[in-house]
Amino acid sequence: MSQQIPVKDISPDPVKVYEPQYIDLYAKREKIHARAISGFFQNIRVTTLYLTMAVFFLLPWLNWDGRQAILFDLPERHFYIFWWTFLPRDFFFLSWILIIAAFALFAATVFAGRVWCGYACPQTVWTKVFMWIEELAEGNRNARMRLDKAPMSLRKFIRRSIKHAGWAAVAFATGIAFIGYFTPVRELWFNVVNGNLGFWVGFWLLFFTIATYLNAGWMREQVCLHMCPYGRFQSVMFDKDTLIISYDYHRGDPRGSRKRGTTSIENGLGDCIDCNMCVQVCPTGIDIRDGLQFECIQCAACIDACDSVMDQMGYERGLVRYTTENLLEKTGTGTYKLFRPRLIGYSAALLLMVGALLFTLITRVPLTVEALRDRGQLFNENNAGWIENSYTLKIQNKSQNEVEFFITASSSEFPLSLQNSPIRLSMAAGELATLPITIEADPANIPSHNNKIEIHVTRQDDSRIQATTHNTFLAPR
Ligand code: SF4
Ligand code: SF4
Image (cartoon, rainbow, N blue to C red):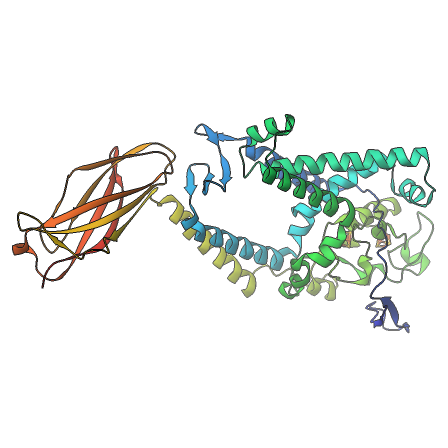
């Protein structure tokens, strides 16, 4: 069922009387044929596209210390990032990194709006690659629109097939690269070539291939408009000094076509020649002259398009440009205010969190130890009359090498000894070992029923790497 709601016309012209416009809330999606454009901001976007793609596709192939540098080994529950090994119990690092990423996004949004969406979001980057393939296979905007309207023919079939084959190839390569972060990538390629994938690897490869193909090929701006939560809440993070892409209505209106080489004043018009180029290049199909809209992903294509039009007309560039609401209202007389409380707050919180994370990572000891008391028996008296307490140690070697550790015990309250001391333990990289130990003490020296003790595990070749666990030593009252 379709429902219509009136839309307020936000054009700034106070004299003109506007009729309310209506939109159909359940309207069928109109396919957008964005015109390709080049220019200063598109060059930046292409550079970030190459960078993000290079990082994404090449990172799994990087080796570190004889193994894949970045590998999230889910079956083994070991997550390798260069020299660090993380285990499931280290998952608070992941939450920490996600919180930092959220704050980085907040700070970037307050500063420059949806700069992430326009330049680095995978959805934008992959969509741009898919649009290139489309243009290669089906031609420019006009040719694509003609092809869309034309009945099916051999030529149309071939062009469409080339496009979809190109999309599928990129989507498949993306799927392999993504799975390569979770399973050794060289093995994965070997298995792909030999058609020897296991069920789950095959399932996820197919899943990510289809997801990429649909998101970047078919859904495109629909993902930004209807699926991405950031697009919906980003506007509440804007303030009047946030850099946004805007049309300068003071300078552009009233709009109208005119002869090339004539000035706006001669024509009694503003600088906008109403050529619609800014609309034709927009990947989300909006008109930037209608003001700030949530559909705008700030790709800056409209800036490059309008600048090229201004160049052809011999007018000053920047009719559509990065500016702020305050600057626009003050028609060029205001100054850009960079230091605002919200931006300072987000940046300070971000710096603090990044600093604390780096400090924790740099000072992190690649070893954990935990001692569990023997629950069956509180204590035991041996033949010599000494009191014994038994524990089970759980030691994890979080380093990426085979290492030997030695185990000691101590107490600040009384002298004790560890049976079979010194205990040595050789552990493989990432190994979790369980080791029963017994601590004994002369009852004459034990001060109370419940005494504090410490158990230390120290790396044989580097005594600075040591982990200590605290526990209790029980004795008769
Ligand atoms: S309005 Fe301009 S910046 Fe926004 S999405 Fe469209 S082309 Fe990109
Ligand atoms: S590209 Fe520039 S001149 Fe052309 S319609 Fe858009 S704002 Fe006006």
